[in-house]
Image (tube, rainbow, N blue to C red; front, side, top):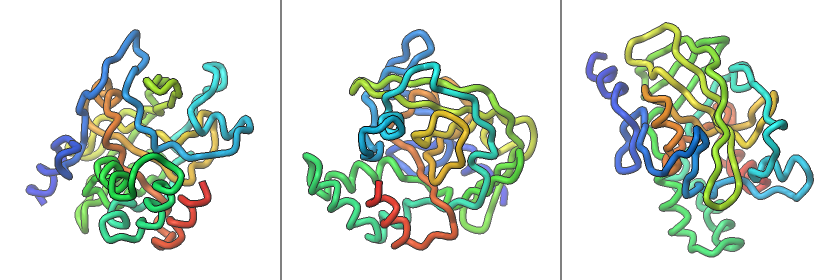
Length: 226
């Protein structure tokens, strides 16, 4: 157990599957993130909601959100990328994009990589599972940050700060799910670690979680539908 907790205390990085990344990979200006912009946003029709999901919105559209928007039992999609379940998604991206399926797979391998395979959020409690071992923390809102990417689109990080729980649990968690106002998330990208500012600069590793009730093929269907 001590060995697991020690491992969970380290930072996530793109070059390994260690936890709690805070790697700074881009420049920040005036509290607004300027980055290379990970282009993993979903492709939506160009209606109002689609534009928001693609990262185009006005500041006054951004509203506070509660942790309850992410409540539930969630699984990492990284194992499905590794075992080939997500190959149809990579093939579809290659069909509509400008890179090969292998290039997209490498990009998402860096993005999805994590050994936190399950997260359970109940009330203010967030539990991180690594295999059968787990650590938990209690979290309260710490506001949100609007990030601007070099591509021109933007994103919102909803930040929560630890107020109690296991020492090894991260001090901060940051949600990004292409939603900018109160709404129940269908999936999300999660950043976690002990340095709030450094996490905002992380744009290449974004562990991604879908409801645990879904099997791999259903996750593929969800991704292809978006």
